[in-house]
Length: 456
Image (cartoon, rainbow, N blue to C red; front, side, top):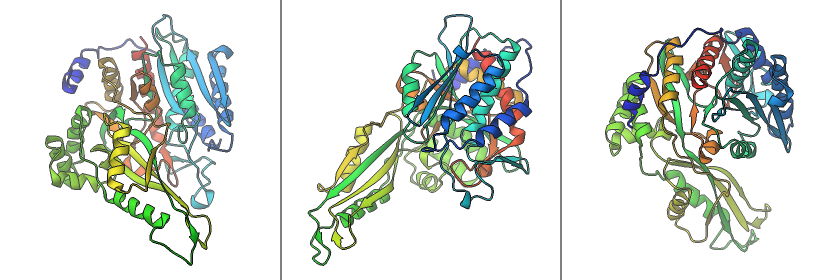
């Protein structure tokens, strides 16, 4: 079924739902968010289990039994699973999010990244956006459901990974353990865009994401004394290979998901980039449109595979010729393109038999999930309750989330975050990360509506 047909068909499912209890309290959700930020769940600090225990405490205080919550240690991190039991044996709905955050150096921040500060209408702190905002909203919503005595037909299982920002080992473990689910709703994908004028522009329903894959380039030489340079030098050879990769551009691509979303985005953003997006949607071979989109970091990831060098290592002493040099090339691969095909293409670009191009064995391919009419309908209803008539755009994320591994296990996964924010307010992974306080009530209503409708 084509996307337009899916959205039209889903409209028939938007019958008015019976009245129900109010969404979770915004003040309580804000407290959960602030308390979450205050626990520095950075890789290597061993704090993820502490955050998992905190979330368990919030849910148990709301009435969850000990047996409803499972925290599984994995090295210095952990996984978290909390189940709101359904009244039937139907396959459960999964809620996805992650507890870990990327590192932040207090010297670089205006405020301590791990001391939540509410200022100027924002909550500042590492993880305030990625991903503790929507995790806090999901925890608060499940707690409220338990207090209200809400009994879903399908069980709702909140799954939180502990190393999404790094190795994703906890994600793989959760995906393998819960691969029999009906579908997953991910709070770390999708979401709404607010224009700089304060008006909502659109909501992105993430149904696909690019494959994340790392490739290691390696070159070895005999080495020797630096006073006797020869015809080959491992560092020079590697540098030349990386320059070729840096200059290379993979063929432009689109699929039904990106084409449908791009046309709507084009109308919303307008201007030169809007015109380029519309032209590309109509003709992906349009060289002018391709050049304009590739020059825009916001949209470059939407039109094909991208590969960039991210780490280099080489040499062993200041006064010795390098015996070995390596570099990591990080690729975000367009859905449908194999990991091996990209490796082979990189090898052709490098065009140097002395340089090996090795694939990270943990790389996992990711294909788009089908747009289910019930999910589309529930998202449309939740978003339109806040912003009537707002465009709902099927989208593909250029980055990787936990959905990657659930899709690989056959679980359709959808990014349906409740956060609406301005592009200029997004500092995920960056300095002075923040989330707007006034986004909390709407996000709570969003999750309340979604889960009540989809767990019927």
